[in-house]
Length: 84
Image 1: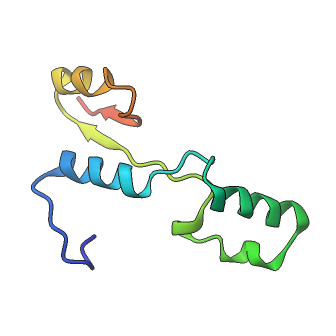
Image 2 (image 1 turned 90 degrees about the vertical axis):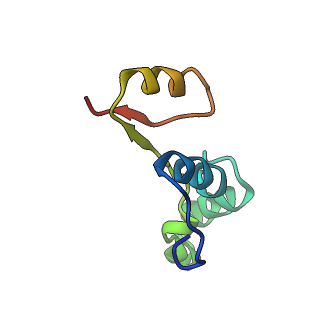
Image 3 (image 1 turned 135 degrees about the horizontal axis):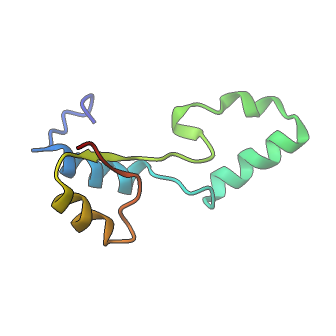
């Protein structure tokens, strides 16, 4: 996002943006294609880079227990860590 000159006001806004744009749970069509390449030992599996991985997890660390509880009540917010 920095390279595209996209600036966000805080870590939470960045988390939401990255989660929606880059998060993957393994069910996407391109992921299934990578799995088939892997099982066939196809050379195209070598193209498995950060942006073409099978699953990508985006997380957020928070310092406040109240904020942690608020964020974890929403099932779309995964990988939230309390750093108290």
